[in-house]
Length: 280
Length: 175
Image 1 (cartoon, each protein chain N blue to C red):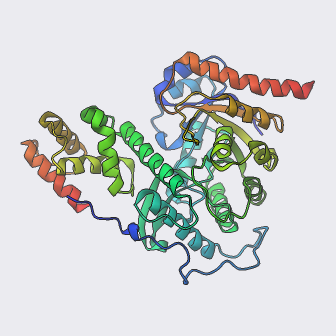
Image 2: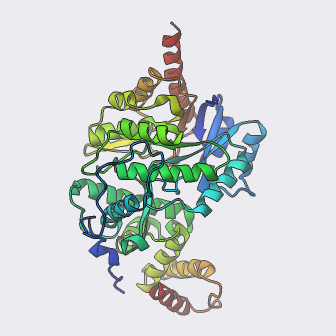
Image 3: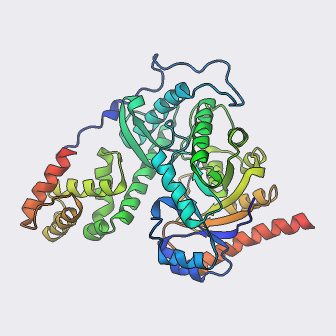
């Protein structure tokens, strides 16, 4: 797996801060927010420095009941080519439902919703992933999402579901440690147990993000600082596998550059400490 | 105007419809040479539509879900939609000020997102204008102008704000 290093989610609001942050090896951009012929100049500047840029899609809905839309797949492929990206990433989620097969009008969620961990959902997801892989010019990695709701009558653990997905499609994994923390608080799923069950040999990179707990529910806000428990999940992951890359995500309430640099430093420290422990 | 209650309020069923085939007892665990996923897709479509209809269209909670968690998720989706619209159309929170969020959430409650966010922003503005909102005439004029600049291939020529509001109201009713 290609080594990416430490990165940050590129957002227009913090373009100037990112350009000046020391030790940023790569960035990820939300694919739907890019126009391939008209990349933001600040992003072009980073590319000019030789920085890797990975497009991260949010609207394919590969965990949905429908086959992925060819137009959306072509758009993601076009962005991968425009950015000369080594891989593209998306989510294990559904984002829309309704439409002809259901007798209900089409509905958009506007965000990522969890897929039931059932054999039906896994069969559909695997076929959708293979369709996506055929349409994309570079490898695909998929991210575990944060869930607020639990599906009743699930048939598999997250580890079993992801293992089946990787075995059947060869897709790579983007593991979001903040989402594992979310599932710990909201669903009582121990991150250590979840990580033990995951096919970490397929790991492409790791997401780290901040959130906030309200009334016993963890909100994966990407608008708050990264907390210790999330870094502890990162440490637990690094004790089991060496991630090719780790990326900080911040989407709202952007802090000053110094705070972002501090969070990147904390992430780097966790990764390096694990590497040191491995070498010792 | 009172928005039409979404058809999804009655829901697509909870997947217990007799017409939907049961999953075969023997599954192809490897996925190699798997049979068509059509039946699995149909069952998944009904389950996901029932959940999403409960979250964004006021449909009853599907069986087995924690109702309080559904409310939390529903509010989170509406809040996310409001913040995406604020980014797609930053003029709207600019024009509406502190009232933006509550006005948007009131609009979103009756109208699930069905297309893109730009369309959503236009529909939101048209709905406010149709209700003679915002109350401040200067803000209403600004909102009407914003809507007119973006709403369609042949917007009415600039004229009195009442004409713009009439056009917005018509556009909103047509959708």
